[in-house]
Length: 486
Image 1 (tube, rainbow, N blue to C red):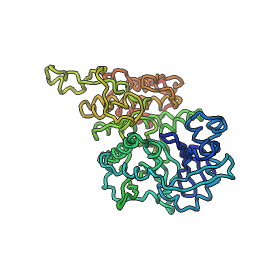
Image 2: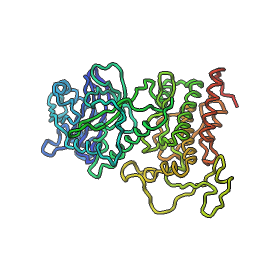
Image 3: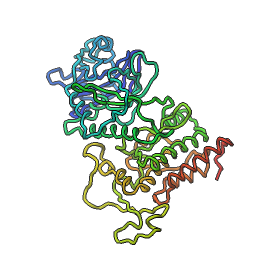
Image 4: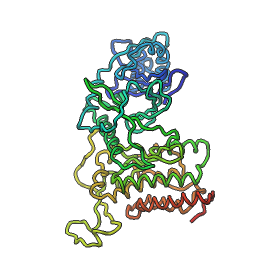
């Protein structure tokens, strides 16, 4: 997020894959608009658009053809946009999804800013990818639909794809969330080499909608979408998003950050409440819905008006390195003890209440089940064990997500700095209980067991859920502020 003025909020700046254009998006006066600044050899080397592109894409040029700093570049960009904003509002074309405003100036002064509205040539490609049946299909069982161009969009909320606070039209008073693939998301992830990243994002969006439509409902899991959001493609309407409830309480991650900023500790009863809600959501996911989440982290637990948590972001496309369990990083294989080739199956090995697993480091040729260039360079961005283990060893996957839940609960109970910029692999994050004397020792020991290096030593999700329901209930009945329980 950039900066705000009464009539315009500067939101995003991003560049294209070819490093020839810089895009910016902002909103105000019931409109959201994308602006572009493009390199053009036919224009003076010191024109505003050329300087912005050189600076953003770190192109080596003489000092006069760039900016002294990124901050200077951003200030000049938004000054130009604000200068032309009142005139843009008079152009009816800005209401169309494909419209981009090309901006330039012969210098950095606002007096010489020029602009032109145009239909971006990649918009048809955006529609084709949305309509591609190989990437999935968002069900038509959602009876109500809303045209994308009728939405009044405000700030984007993060997450996979695009999540944006919206009103359904100019007369609507209530706010909702648009979750889907807007044109900004397409422009930010598309390229000239197969569009692998945006196709993977579209697949994940369809997958999340399918899961939410077929999953048995639960208080702590995001409900089915309220409406489809559509865009016209030829003679038909195709889905580009859905409408979901807006949870005004934010999420657990933002709550931790706000409390840390204020130098405060979240109440123990609230922490027990939230840990119980997290565990209940994961219990329902694995034992009732027979699936997995993959992206367990504080930011994916939304907070409703009653302080209950709601697990969102069901794309199943990526896992955060801060909460991913190490054995699911794509470099390990798992087998249930007793299932080895040639082993003799007995009731004790085939029907034991809790199976044990043996993990072996993979040392074969490179393997991939994630589309190339769809994600980053991490090992789990090439080999995703989640769908494989869900079919072959669902309890091993449950233990993997208990670890992720343990890391998430540790972040909530411990309230550490939530940046984690230096974490590139799960093993890079070292957990401790510094500055958490208010947290009961019993809780610390339990969460540490959830994060055990050996998956066989971790609690199962049923045990985790029972523990936190009991602890939450005890605090409700007898509030305590001490951390000495054992």
